[in-house]
Image (cartoon, rainbow, N blue to C red; front, top):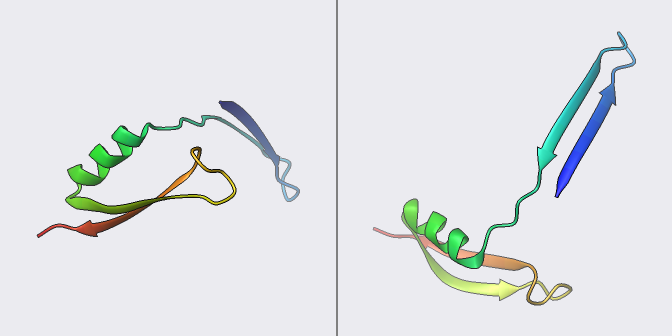
Length: 63
């Protein structure tokens, strides 16, 4: 998903644009990223209003 934002500052009329891409990582990519920073996934919950589409990862720092 690609998004372009435009902001105009009232104080001086300066214009700033921002182009950004929203990327959704796979379940495996998220688990791998957490592992890379020494976190272990304890539980994964689904968002009640978006089952199967949005997840909450409960992770704990490994020793």
